[in-house]
Length: 238
Image (cartoon, rainbow, N blue to C red):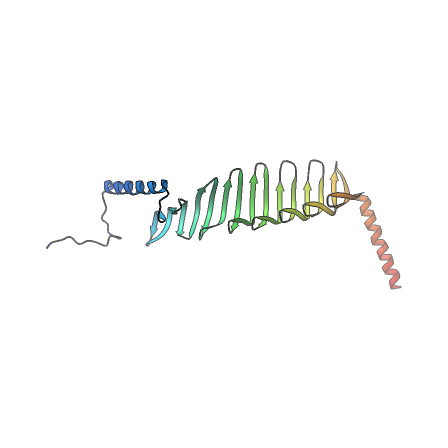
C-alpha cells in the first residue's frame, strides 16, 4: 500500500482550495445568520484570530442571546478596543469578564468617558449631554468628590456629595460669581460674591442671603477682631 504521509494539520504547509473555503464559509455564515434572525443560537460563536490554540487577536464574539462583541481579544475574558451595540447604547473600551472597565458609552445624546465599576461610572469621568458637561470624580454612578459642571446658565467647580454641590466651590452665573460654601445643593455658609465688579463678603442659609458686607469692610472688621483678641490676650497675661 502506497500512501502520502499526512502532516500535522495544524502546522502543515498544505492549503485548501479557495473555492472550497469560500463555499464552506458561505454555508456556515448563512446557517448562523438564519439562527440569529430566528433567535435560535444554542451557543456562543467566535470569528477571529487564534494564537497557540487560544482566542487571541481581532475577532467577533456573538453571544447566544445575539449580543455581538467586536474587538481585540487577549482571551475570552479580556477584550480591548471593543465595540458593542445594543438597544440605543454603544459601548467602546476595555471589557474584562464581561464587565466594562474603562472606555466610552454613548446613549442617545449622552456620552460618558471614564472608568466603570459594576456597569456604573466610577472614580474619574467626563459626561456630556446636550450642552451639559461634567468632568471630575464620581462613585458608583453618583457625582461625589471634586468636579467641574457646566450648562448654558451656570458653571460650578468644587466639592460634591450625592450629585449636589456640597462643600467648598465656585458658582458662576450671568449675574454673579460666588466663591464659598455649599450644603445639599444650595449656597450655605460664608463666602465671597462678585457682582458688577464689586466684591462682598456674604453669608447664606439654604440659599437665603442673611448678611452682606463690602469686602474691604469685612477685612477691616476681621482686623479689628484680631486686634481686640490680642489686647484681651495681653491683659490676661499681665
